[in-house]
Length: 231
Image 1 (cartoon, helix red, strand yellow):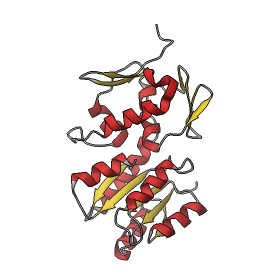
Image 2 (spheres, rainbow, N blue to C red; image 1 turned 45 degrees about the horizontal axis):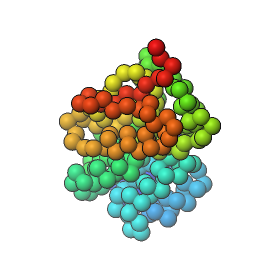
Image 3 (spheres, helix red, strand yellow; image 1 turned 30 degrees about the vertical axis):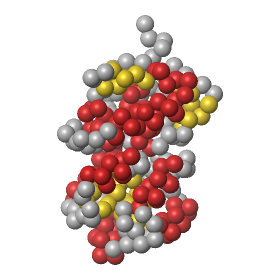
């Protein structure tokens, strides 16, 4: 079985050595880039299964790398976990707004980091027992190819928008609170104070175009995707 490749984008070599060793022990195939230019070259050679991305790189901000990954169709599905030495809430919010899947502040526990990587990868698949719907009204999802169509038009979504849509589709007709979505899509504590969910819902609704009205806001409760064919 082919090992999942994790691209480490980090300029601190002592941290890289620890991450390489720990990732190999956890069954991953680590690949290293020490700056943004090397990261782009690595990604051009092969799209990784996961990216560990330092927010402060010597040539370009990690946020630029994250934005490029999440706005490029070839790499939009790749999970990104951002690393930073700073712990301000604004960094976390900015990272999530750009599409990062998780956020860890240095110094970090390597064991916790490995658990977070595995948790993000698990969240990419629908939860056991949930109905995996591929069509709701004019919305059609090709899960394996990470493609979405509304009618005959293809819609390009980021990895988080894609997971958000899958989560809503698997619970069509049910209201999901912001707290539930934070936990299930982002893996954040329900106590986290952020408008990340609202922002991503707004962007998803805009991208759905003709199907935008199927994504409803339930005032005071959360959001739901409705099936126009439902009785």
